[in-house]
Length: 121
Image 1 (cartoon, rainbow, N blue to C red):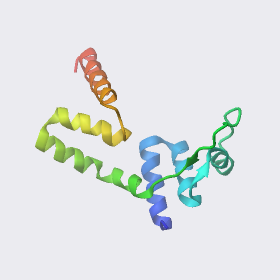
Image 2: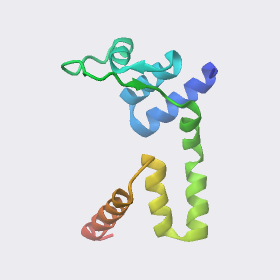
Image 3: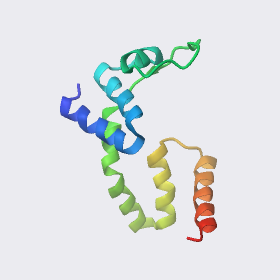
């Protein structure tokens, strides 16, 4: 079980990275445990999104994974020092988005560098 202070820290981190709506959902999941989308909507009072799904998916927030976000800058600094800027940028994508396919990683990297070239940076 996660302490109230642990939940508060996790919700603050999620709010910082992803905004207030996501943090509200996260707080609900951390406090109440695994929930269906209908339950999340009911507890957070965010409103429905049309017709109910035919398959019920259960959602959960993993406190330890959220807390690891605090370590990302250190991980990125180590990777940058050891392997260089380009490797650090690829690693950053994995840290930010979790599981990505190789093509998604490469597309993200190309898009980022295309935006830098286009803006003159």
